[in-house]
Length: 253
Image (tube, rainbow, N blue to C red; front, side, top):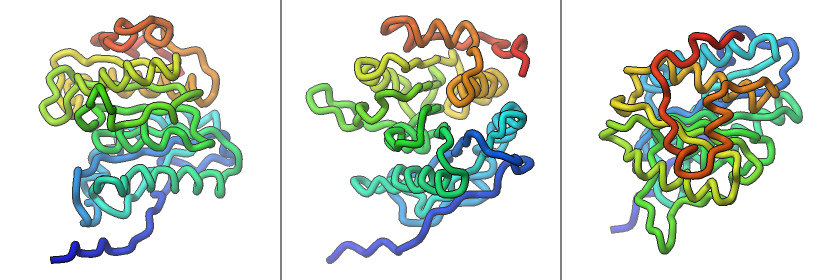
């Protein structure tokens, strides 16, 4: 029996989160989670629940800098093997940002399978930074790693993972980060101890960390000392940096 053809669809960008900037000087593309294999359309409800809180925090922090925040609307719910549909849609969205706003820096912010999409699409010429939260990554064969890292050279990369994540293996994101660090010194990874896949137990801290990192990468703001230390520290220290409870309370934007 022949394989059923995947229906042809187009990706899209959601409306800007918050007010539309008068002049856009940077953009964040939010990449929601997905599934390993699925030709179904993504659920708008799931997408909204996954990213709306973080999107609002990022948009609020970057409003005075001219930040535009959009959620990427995938064509399909699944990654779908070598098709890598979610990563392809992230690259399309980066092209669309350039078309709409001109030559502005882009930060890809992905959750779950969207984290893998952000890391894979990070080589787009408009992208200068990537944030991957609890990224879904495949098993990493030491002899022949599945997931590439060279595309991240020249980008600033943040990975955040809960140590009790039962959906996506935090050890796999550590291995990925270790390989990426060899190709690019600007890689750091934070561990959220005792938190699970959704990082719900430390939602505020994770949001503040993402905001702090994004503002530094897109607009040159001074990042917090923990982020600075994590970027500077050699492996494994800078790749197993604990996210402290209460992180961000003293940060002012």
